[in-house]
Length: 501
Image (cartoon, rainbow, N blue to C red; front, side, top):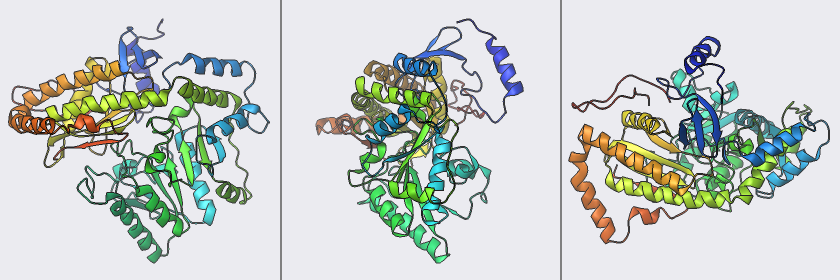
């Protein structure tokens, strides 16, 4: 593919014309990507990179079926939803068929942020309440209303940045949170924290409009809530006139494998009041959706204010959305997420037994996190090591990211066409790099004996962690982000200059 500008020229023009707060991956040596196919991305030199992080290109980059559906509809018509068109109603029908029956009314918008903003409007209109309960480290979007309810963002602005109508509950993280894997009932314990918040707000004369949570926290560190947590929270929130909003922008559309929606991991007895969708819904095309109950939708309409979105639900977007649903089904991508995800968890569980840097493996389907630690007992986040690893993987032409509040969680959320061969390739590279880091820092020498003894015990008992990874959800616990990419020195020092990925 012929380039209009050299990489240096592109970077110079970006610095000149694009806002400085708009960051790039690998800031010291950013990639210039010119095309992509399936689970691979290609730079201007034709070098191929394995994409382990792009949950937007859900069914694979440049999928021909999706492209054909888009171009075919573009050749005929694209207009707004004030005109009748079959694509809109057909897509709404197909999409709601994947959800519990009571979630039957759609509002189509253009991004995850738009979807979550509209969800807040629906929730606040429902009973006239204003306050919102969110989770530690949560991120729900980039517009003002969502920065207000996203501690992942507003905490960067200082201690007084939280608005009085926002209440932050502990993240239901059983590895790093307040209630951990040794607690007899972490789901109830974390839900009780929400109940306490509700009681306190009522004492202060405030009223809860909504509890909002990603069905599995992504930016928050690949956190999978314990089963039963959402049910109990929903009970407490609904009792005071609030609604439960499940944010599926990052994790929906079959990524968890066993279910189409991540909230379904909580059990059949849990149904949210509002579900928001984005990123994977259009395989890279800007579209999103809010789905809610008839009762909440009618309450919103009763305000007398029309809701209109110029591009939401246009014929082209709906044709693309339909094509994505068809590819997921035709190519059995949910099944692939289960098979490849379980295999990836097995491979990573082996690394946990081998490397003292690996504190926890958690995941379901093709949503997996690797929590790197400096100390297994204290669970000290290995932030510098994680970022060093990300940059070294880039040199191996593998794209992975580190996230979480400490930027120490290796974050897997690849296109759904990711294969077992891809999983093996990535983990072999991680194995080699972890060995290099541990030898350079002395961790291997200090921890090798105890790690080997632990591994032998588990093997003799016939209860290795790799067996446990075959479950639909894995949370393999141990006892216990921004760094320049440089090799570790003989003095075991770590790079210190900050970077962002």
